[in-house]
Image (cartoon, rainbow, N blue to C red; front, side, top):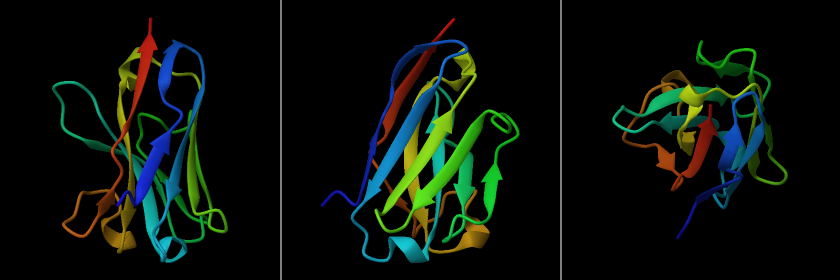
Length: 124
């Protein structure tokens, strides 16, 4: 059963924009913090952006602050990552993540739920 499904990835030129979506079938999605992580070739997966259960509190990696915006719609069980001013170093597989604990949102944990990822490629 696919609990988190990402979409919206693709190929874009540097300076361009993409919007990623994560559709959830988790019954308790609206109760949990959620985040986007990414993994570039040859690198470890890293935190990109996250938000608490309501979306009222958001968190960003320094590398994307001011360029990316995370949001969620709990009625639709959907989370979105709007990415602007994309750079070649943003190239990665982007993963949707749901974390039972806000305190561990920015790190990977054993109870996390993951999507299968969507590829984002930014050409120079």
